[in-house]
Image (cartoon, rainbow, N blue to C red):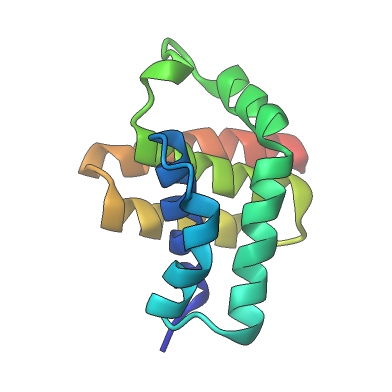
Length: 133
């Protein structure tokens, strides 16, 4: 059975595909949802999340850039960048508790990123969450 984490992963995968130049990524998103068996409320959550990240991408990227210390945004790992984008969107534009957002981002990083990415992502998101409080 698909979880809300799977829904977030589908969004990260779609954003990654867009970032690497797949112009069909948005059209393929529904197929990803179907393949992962993400249905009903979870699918709607994923659609809204993807739409929100895309609509607010410039603002999200600015927030991330402002929290990078001694690191260039363009040098971020492409998967890590998408994980951060999804999480920053949720932190800034939804009512999802920050603990859940950070926990979910770290779960996704465990599945798709290198080990060191977890602490990097956690640090960035923790700073952003503290500002929101």
